[in-house]
Image (cartoon, rainbow, N blue to C red; front, side, top):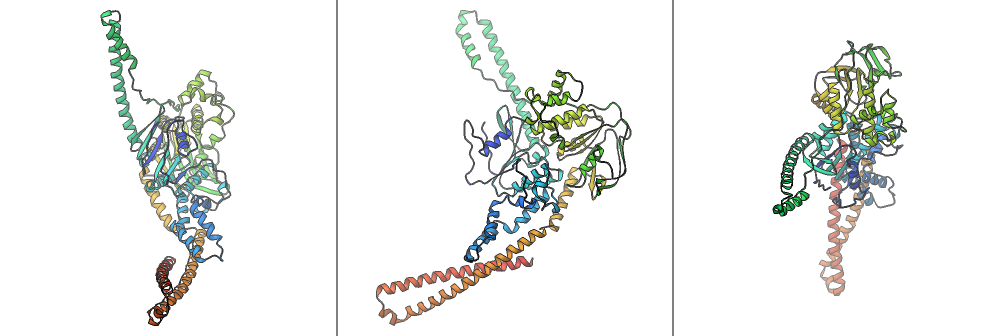
Length: 607
């Protein structure tokens, strides 16, 4: 495999599960060594990578994210432990370096990333270990984005992000000036972010310019071209074989026949690229429908005494395709859990009709799968199916012969998600309730899922960050905002624009948390005090050097001095005078530089 990614590009790697996408990342990170060939990166590039397996920490969310910038963290520790007996110029050097590396915007940068990824200000001081697994992965991503880098390696960064966070993240990537290689499966995200798509198939990596849609077009053209070439090659093979068969028995044609046989043996064939999806599943439509299927009447939803959604009245009918919009914490999952009967309304009434069975998909279901048994055994427990029927059924969901019988503990996140969806299809629900169903799924599976949902005869209510799935399957949006649910008249583009404006307003209102403001003011006071002390030291040194230079100038201008000094003494005085002149010039330059910095610090404090 040969591959080149140019500086400044944003390359997205796509391909089916198991083709080697993660292996390629491990090679780039030096975790694996290639059996043949070389991998080279510019020596001065700093690499930042998204880690999936960070141990839970007692650090607050904000501190955990800020820890990503190790340079500034090191400078902070040195400044905090600075010994007052040392010269002030050392502290000034540290504080200058801190300022040069963006230290006075350090906390603001971390807060901006946390806000963009969906963390509310009240969560910033919450310990990292108290967040759920998905939210800890968001924190890992936030920490990665804090790392100063020229090369960013991201393995499925949009998993566990909601629609609003994905929208913020792609805008962040567009501003990033370094080189990005990522594994991602959200085709609309790829269309917006990627400058090239690298497709890995049959051990070969091919690069296509543009986003995922352009990749599909280019690949379709390549498939057609390869098929045409393959057809020509087959015609030529048949023609040569006919010549051999016709003249094999004729001695006069023996030499020509042998020549054709050798030509046939040496013929190379263009490998036909696969374009077949391994997924051929559907969600069976329910036999009977009721009108309506579900009814919310003056419902208040929440947990304990905490109200999340209040006074909600709405109905769901057959063929409804409802997408739920709302910022993090608005209550999207609360609404879905109420439909799945995992929580009951605090007040009001939620009624499901007689024939409305609910199929609920949520991320936590991947974790509660029995890890000791196989996918085959899971399906076998769901109903009366023959062994061959189970094999065929799992095969339609993309399970290979070998993966069918592997314990769940050995399956990937994508395989687990497919198994949960497969079990859901066996239930034959009338109402599908889906909470982020595309996490861990590759692009082809997402396309197949969107197609299956599109042809489903029942009703669907879905929360998803995959905009392609929402655009294809949803015909109505409900917006949750300020504890209320309303029908949203706009489309996804309108909603994204609304969220973007809201983010800018929020950032203007909440530029810093109180704690970070206090830290920033303390550092600025420390810097100003150190600068003032350094300025006084320079003034004293400048005064002494200026006096000595003035005295020495007068002495050298006196004829009596020149008459009574020998040549070596005179050269010594001249050398000292030159040294003092240079010292005065250097001290004056330092004095002006520190004075300007003090003036700037006053202006900053006023602002």
